[in-house]
Length: 384
Ligand code: FAD
Ligand code: UDP
Image (cartoon, rainbow, N blue to C red; front, side, top):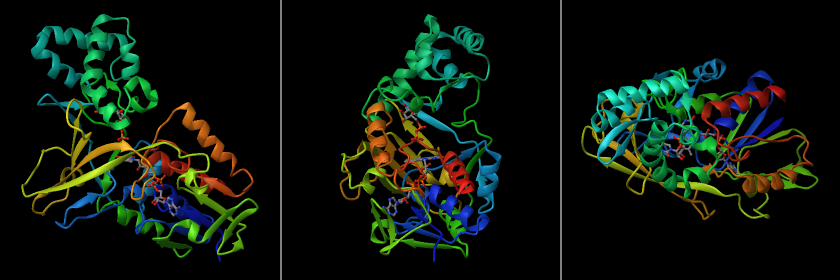
């Protein structure tokens, strides 16, 4: 019946399924635990008719032409340059910290001339248009640069990171804070990728369309273990040894009933609020970097460009340590050596399954953006 089985209908599963079905002529069975496709990119209209992202705000951004072209087969776009501001003691400042932020912060405090001097110094040391991680900036030998780094560290990174990770910026993997560098330019955009935006009609219809193919069967609302048995001598589908490829995009520890203990993750509690007003904050995303228990507020209308609805819906994100309790979702792998070696231990348990493939931010215990995930899925499908 099937040549391939894919567990999970998120970015990884959907892209791999379409590629295998269309370009390799494989008959693909996709098993998805949730009642819908799209994984964490899933969006839907709330009771007020406002399009919301149920698992946190998602902005597609990429510089990869092939990935953009591939997704564009399944959707039109609402493209924009995504901007984020941080609320710092009542004032909104652009994040990532850039030269606009520098002048906002220092023109008044130190005088325009001194702020210009600081700008020239940053350009001289790092070069116009460069991106410097906060870790690197803090290591500067120049006292002026170190003072800027102190400001950015204390007002942008410290409290937000403590909320998000329960750890200080210097305690977490530098690649995480490195996602939001200091920009030596006047670019207020959060990402510097060529393409940024959201599917014009939402992420869900895009993934539905991607999975709509005669060679693809999608079953939602089912845990893969209801149909699949992962045993030492092979993988069974409905009790019969399955000889084709199996792509697994779920959490690896769960596959083995967490026998070595749970892989640590951070989770998020999303609190949605509807406000009967035209606009709540006037920005798509406001990061709370020095106050509050939530990390950020997203106002969906400003992200999706949705028009003609009454009122506005926002979401606040409250991070917490994932425990595996019912209803909790593992969102962010906590990248460090100890967790990586636990992950490798689980990986070793899959070594006997020749045609078993781990793909996805859960299955690979990695921090992937949508585009990077899609690229990996395209590559894996290409190899099979
Ligand atoms: P998922 O989307 O998690 O899909 C995995 C699927 O597998 C899920 O649907 C799950 O239900 C299913 N599954 C798991 N176990 C089983 C099982 N046993 N049986 C059946 N099904 C199973 N990226 C960006 O590029 N831009 C952004 O703005 C952005 N914002 C983000 C915001 C948040 C809050 C988070 C957490 C992530 C964000 N990302 C963003 C990253 C993006 O969500 C991921 O790159 C993408 O979702 C990865 O896709 P995936 O298929 O690997 O995982
Ligand atoms: N970060 C921060 N303050 C900000 C934005 C980001 O401290 O205003 C840090 C924080 O540790 C966060 C990391 O940078 O986890 C990466 O941010 P990004 O927005 O890429 O995270 P996402 O939630 O999109 O994965």
